[in-house]
Image (cartoon, rainbow, N blue to C red; front, side, top):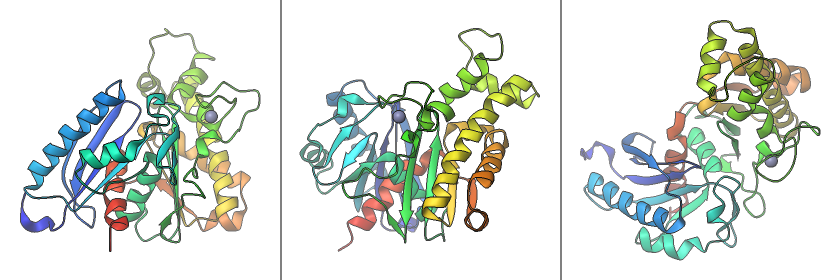
Length: 308
Ligand SMILES: [Zn+2]
């Protein structure tokens, strides 16, 4: 590894289907990154993390300065366990700290992956310079994290930032969290599929990217599907604006490949549903770090937490 990076921090982002990992410098410059599939069972996941850490140490050419890890689900900062992971239930209640400290051969800082992605955007992404921001990631589900006054807002036990599970449609669909009509059920990739299938004849094997292609070509039903999801996203954004008056709201995740097809209706709805004074001072834009935000945020958050 060239000496230009100085201290190197290792980050891991364990999502519902992929593990992203890498090494970055204190300012967020990426020195190395990789991605692989999440194994089905926790023991295999721990073995994989051990192997990936060996890779990172080899790439760094020396000991890494700190290690951070983002995990899916409600993370309890006091007991240091995942309370509930709708998309990765095998992690629920596992005593993670001793296993992870053994794997990473020392201190390791871990938290909910969406919270750490928000920290990544704050420290090294599109949120740089903002004192308060919210990151909303829209993919197969919705993740969100909040930074206030330059600190990750964890809540009293670490459960803060679950915007995806705010109810926006009482008569809506069942959600992975066990309730009905959550924002996630109206905005995620499965929601766009559902909105499209409700209006257009198509095969069961149609994918969100097919609908995006059709929307780009002007298919009115495909445009509608993104617009409906976007308006629901705008309800969530309006709620954040009225409650937090944040400086910046960033939208990321795989569904942001749709760009304005999703974001424009969201902005229109957010403007309509929030106080004008608060909307006008909030910078709302696409997130900057793509799917690297989680591991970069984990690495930089660990670097910050590990400071003497
Ligand atoms: Zn839910």
